[in-house]
Length: 121
Image (cartoon, rainbow, N blue to C red):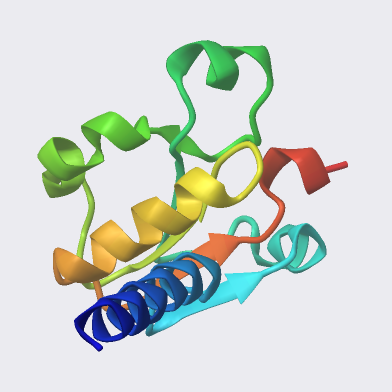
């Protein structure tokens, strides 16, 4: 009986972790690279690339500022919480983490680019 309860608890925890990883953070807008192309150059928008400096130097979109994911929390002061932040990475995974972090830090309008630079053409 006790083992069954433990197994159910572990199963529920596993499902919660999987769903939490798959679903976008609450309040984060998701856009495609095609939609990003239409939004580039907008005033009052901050464009952030959270890849490593080496990845950024190799290929990036003009107008994006490089703040690597591992530096984002300590460099968030460089961004305005009042302006929209559009975040990109290589595939969309790091930018999803960055989006979640920015929401936790109090940023109101955060947008993640689905597919990242892999989807950019």
